[in-house]
Length: 49
Image (cartoon, rainbow, N blue to C red; front, side):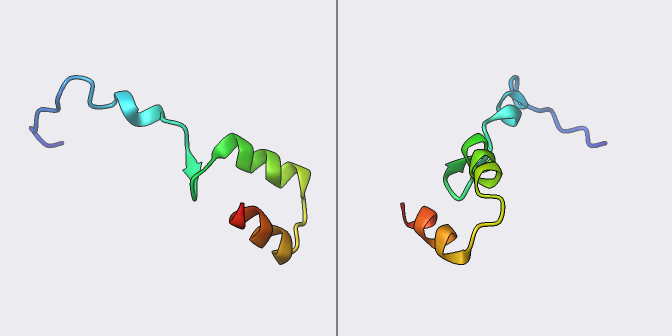
């Protein structure tokens, strides 16, 4: 362990909402659940939006 002192509230941002390429993770998981085996065309269309 290092002896470096961390600022108060250093770990407060550890639970921010995860984004995958700018898409919030819950919406990305919904997309994966809705389109279980998407074709590459579908991925390109969704990415373009």
